[in-house]
Amino acid sequence: MSSTIQFCGGAGLVTGSNFLLDTGGTKILIDCGLVQGVSAADELNWDAFPYNPADISFLIITHAHIDHIGRIPKLVKDGFKGKIISTDATRALVEPLLLDAHTLLLHAAESHQREPLYDVSDINRAMALWHDTQYHKPQELADGVVLELFNSGHILGSAMAKFTRNGTSIVFTGDLGGGNSPLLPLCENPANLKAEYLVMESVYGDRVRKEDVDRKDSLRDAIVAAAERGGTLFIPAFSTERTQDLLFEIRAMMHAADIPPMPVYLDSPLAEKITAAFKAHPEYFAPEIAARVQGGEDIFSFPQLHLIENADDSQALAKHPNPKIILAGSGMSNGGRALGHEAHVLPDPHSTVLIVGYQAAGSLGRKLVEGAKSVQIFRQPVVVRAHIEHLYGYSAHMDGAELVEFAQHAAEGGTKKIFVVMGEPAASAFLAQRINDYVGVKATTPDAGDTADIDL
Image (cartoon, rainbow, N blue to C red; front, side):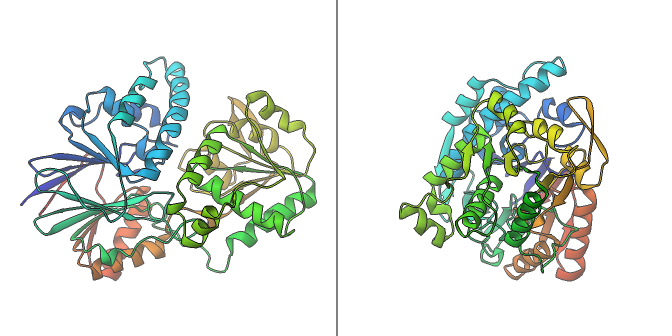
């Protein structure tokens, strides 16, 4: 039987994941995310969907990052009334993330003099449509399609979504973890999924991390160096997964006296809520970590950690004595409390800004990684004198070599065609070429709006 995939978002861009699987008898969306980090994001996010939301029967969510969930309330506002399905851990993370995104989107709407993208009632209606599931639990959707989720190793509860009909399968990977989180189990082997078609991410499709760099050692070295200079170590960190990874590692180093004792400030009420959701779902941790949590250990708490609740306390951190560590959102320095800290820290040659994740093209974080000597914060020029360090070891994504290996294993399980998405054009094209050359499976890089026919 014939089906189509429409690449509605996340094609030609890293963010804005949104794919439509149309089997002829039912329409299934995979993810519905915000476009982030590019100058056209505000226009793209307010655009009408290229389909009628009322015609969609199911929305499957791979994980809770905002570039995969951020337009769900708009989808509901525009007429979607179907079922939303994800793991229960993903559902636990979604509501606080959407509420936080709503605040940022209100500011964007005001600055561009347009109607809000959605309101809180749309978030509430979306959550009322949500249905939980677990890994490896097949469930029939409609038109003979069976859904099954598999661990993708990216963040807590993240999943690859497999759709099967009449013995043929397609897998949408969502984002794929490269085994860098100290908290999570590894991504499942795609050979076991036995899917003829694959829609896979390519964020780091043209990059390979250095194998000789240990992430924990690099983090320790950055902390020690910042302490010796007597400055602030500022880490703009994603509230989901990255902050929890870092708290876990810093806690361990503090307990072992591997780093000097100093205050650690978590300046992110959102990250606090996300951390609580992590604690509520230890079954998604790696087995050894799950056992510690279930045994009563608080793996994210330590005496040097201080939680910053309100904006006044956040601003006052600049006056707290150094050395100190501050973690705050957002991870790409494109909003949130991170900007206030960077305006203070960047001109200080004794301080360090440690970038620990992917930085989208056009974002402030990307400009810092690329060596900018001056940046704009709150429409004011800010000179960059601080040390800028980029630590890839905590990346939640597979690198280029790991993605090729993933494709190779998928081919061993029967994959015949791969659609390479969710990457900058150069990264996607490079990965697709490597898959064609070294794996021997046809790989293509669809553009936004493209449609592909598959035998499903």
